[in-house]
Image: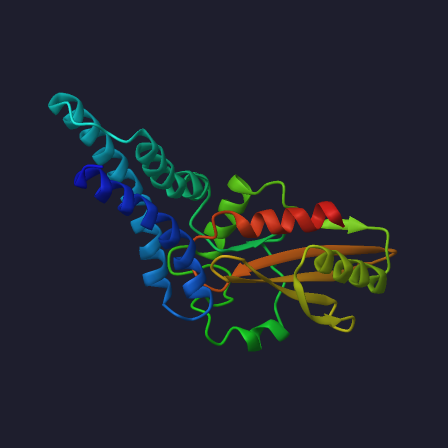
Length: 242
């Protein structure tokens, strides 16, 4: 095998562990978030460049009539394209949703967190509804534009029944329930992503009105300006399961 093709092959093979290990290294505290995201970016950019280099080598070898290994080409192409395919949906989603990380069914009166506050001391995002780039009015408008399907849920249950049902649904979804309070009318939970170990916090607020329970949900990321739509997906999943 020609040395140029060997370099192309080895570089391509290295991209896959970089893609897989960068998020896990952050999750377990080996590297910081900047380095982790840099590793993922390197894997994607490296995949694109390596594919381009592969096509250049194919053309060069064809002109010079240098033998080329088809098996090595296949492995190089596969390893180079894996990071691109893996990250393409996330990039697409990032472009499709607003750059916010705090989502709720009630942007006019978002539910408040209680026990979760103690667990967010190292979070880069606070629990103020809105941020430096988005006022509360901006948040309300963005919710109306992008998440009109997230609405307050009204059910024929007592407060106690709605709270217990909320706890069960959150546990079924795989979240860690950290606070169930009938006196406050809330259920609080935390979701942890597999690869990066990102933690998002969710609160369900239950209010009583006559024989009905009025349920609102809020999900907030601890880090990151954008959530790639994950918080809205989580709230929708809860409402659908409920």
